Length: 460
Image 1 (cartoon, one colour):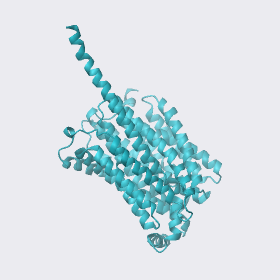
Image 2: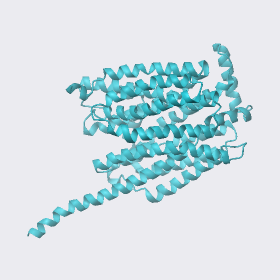
Image 3: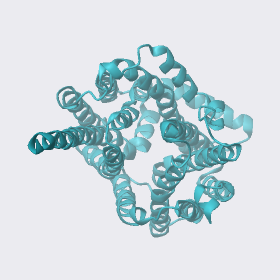
Image 4: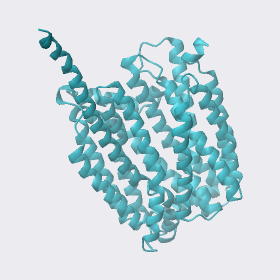
């Protein structure tokens, strides 16, 4: 009898071990597909200033020239000196915001469709769309075709939110925690390596079409990703657990693109009035911080291109420098942050960014610029993880996903608006006023965060 009673005890352990192995395979697949996607995505980052210079020369009779005429008229109307060398900054900011805005709008819809049809089919569809965008980029000899490539990429860029959904589907809380860490590592490695690869491949291209080889490399990676997803990514949402109708999903998707609903956190239930107020303040702080940060971050390559005449290769080294500092910070300093100290660390990070932005904007030597860039990279690696950790403490177990989904959407909205706002100020006033203004405005989220009462504050 003893033997018969022991066997059922072993079964759950075997099931758990099998589940852990299955989760590990899913996490490995998520890591590979995200890393490959991010390597392809970041290839273009050091090339953007040179790309816009190229279109400014070859597309004067096309879309670029038409927009430039309108921008010149607008500058005269406002009494702004015509500095066409800054037009590329403005065009770049518009393109950056357009890409992020399309991603902000499409990601919730892609997520809703995946709730009905499964994660894998939508991941494949997203990967195919991204591959098409890189295919168009390889032949974007005019600015209009390049804009089309960016539009296709923005609409299709739902794979990050899908990867998060895949991790959320895992049964084990431990696996879910590991999954978020895996996503973070993939991002760090992608942004560390990808820009340098893009810069290196641009040197191998024909001088007239220097972007062709980097674009072809990105296309090759994206095609490999399609094959990898098709054969190695398991479906994590069984048919029995899928939504029966897309109606509820579309309702949730429409909520996630409604700024009023996002800032009010109206979908989060069972919070006290005080807790909801703190959560709303935290969301506004997160949005304003990312709005300012993403805008100034986006203009960095244009600043170095205009002020120091950086080539694509030098831009790639700059991204490598930033990536290494952020990777070391996230792997060392950030991992040692004690629970309950996130608010202090986030405030400190934003405070460090204030002088770093002013230093970057004022630097006339590469030494001073890189000192400011080092402070920027260190501080930026701490703020978002800490604000995310604070936000995750709100809501019951069944509301955590809603809270974090709203926070991600607020971040996506900030990244959709930040680049065009910062590039407009840069275009109209120059680099120093732009960075000084952005740095000083960071005092606002610092003060807003100081007034947010977290669970830790209540027990102190």
